[in-house]
Length: 287
Image (tube, rainbow, N blue to C red; front, top):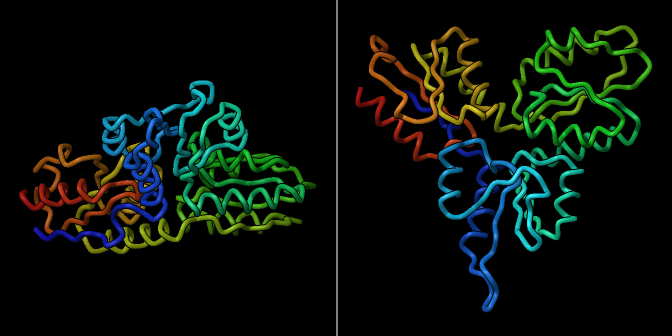
């Protein structure tokens, strides 16, 4: 059996920066005479349960409501970002905010806010319940429609009159986004501004997964099940016609999964630690 490992597998820049900010807070002792720092993250800082368990063991707590924040606490904003009204709510609690929002997400927020100030309505390609999407929508002050697929978009009633602009969750499928763009531009009398908000790292990962899927009999995608970019890597592999399994850890692997397979591809989401990927590779090779 031959195993190919994606070069792009593992932490992206945004995840790495967020975790470094959190680690720096943990490793910096309080000033002499000061009480121990109460470190919170607003929502899970990234979508990987194993990483979250590690930080919980170090005393980092996750909160999801500003009213749960005590004055003087240090609150780290998750890599996915948060809605602007929530940020204001955290400020009113007297907390110190450390913003670990991914720079790519921050850029998308800024671009959306700029278009909304011109009175344009957002058409957002993304997962409605995803925390990043909830944050992005808070900047669409002139109105917004969210859809997760072309089918959902086609079912939307988009009245003529408003000016629209199109954006995407940063971890969405670029090829699908281009199809959506072309569909919207073909509408009679359509005026559409298109924002480029899909992260380059996401596009590179998806392209490598697509290329790898064409070379292997079976794909293994590693990462948290709540991670949208990880789920999409598995979707890309399956769309290429290659059998694929999505696992969080090596414990989910069995010899039966790879029985009879000659070549296996291994990739991982942007919030998957290298240690977990290495362990999955070791177990696969033992099979």
